[in-house]
Structure formats: structure tokens, C-alpha cells
Length: 180
Image 1 (cartoon, helix red, strand yellow):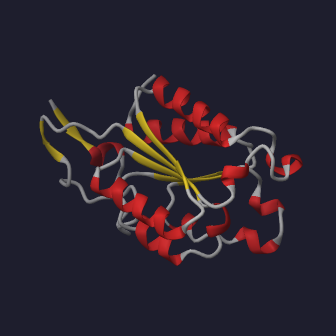
Image 2: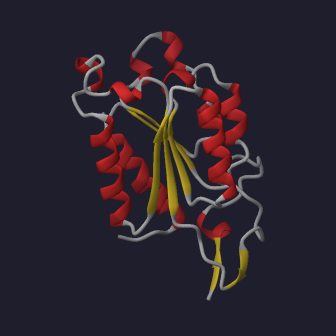
């Protein structure tokens, strides 16, 4: 069997996430990675209790359950994590890179508008990256409309509540050719 990640994730010439030059994983009997990392930034551990009128009543545990159920539909594994610490998120991005993950979904939360460190780490990921926000960041305060992560993301999903995570997993699945 001959699989090529290049066919599922075309190279765009920029070297951004999800865009590796062809030949990088193009060998007989190659197996495409099947784990998606879902990383969550600061204060998302307070979902369900922090500003429920804005972020909804679903907890982070509810989001994790939704993600696991969605990933299983596509026969994908998942690593689901949350941290209030920028360096820990960077370390997880490095881990995802080292494990040749199938995709990375990130809700950088408060680090969206501030973290060049997360941006630089994401630049090292060859798999598709999807940025998720529970609220529509473009309908909120002007400072929330700038995202460093968007520079490397293959897609951005915002404003769909926690369902945006399921949409992101389905999007990554489509990008890598995973079927239900």
C-alpha cells in the first residue's frame, strides 16, 4: 500500500502547518498518523461557570466528551489538554510534532492575540492546524480580532459554541482523508 500525506495535505509553498513538501511521508507501507491533539488555553477550565451567557453552560469535560465522540466517528485517537500556562502549551505542540500527529486543534483563548511563542511552535507542525473559538471573536472587542494562530491555521472556526470543536475534528478528518 502506498500512502502519501502530500495527497491529503497539499504543500502550499509557505512551509506553514499542514503543508509539508511532497516526499516527506511518501513511502511504501507508510501509515498516516491517526491522533489529533486538541489543546485549550487559559481559563477554559472554567467553562460552564465563567460568563455562561457568553461561553455557554457546557463544561470542559463536556467539550472533551464531544471531541472524543467525534474523533471516534472517524476512527481517530485524541489527546485532549488544557493549560493556563503558555510554556506548557508550547511543550504539547512540540510533543504533537514529535509524534507526527494527524492534526492539531487549538483554542488558544487569551493567548490568541498575544503569543508569538505559540505561533512559532505551531510553525513546526506539518499536520493540519485548526483554530477554534467558542464565541465569534470578530463580533467582540477589537483587540480579539487579531490572531497570531490564524497565520498558520488551515481553518478557523468561531461562533458555533462548543460545537465548533466537533466541526474542527470533522474538518481535520476531511483534510487527512479519514472516513466515518
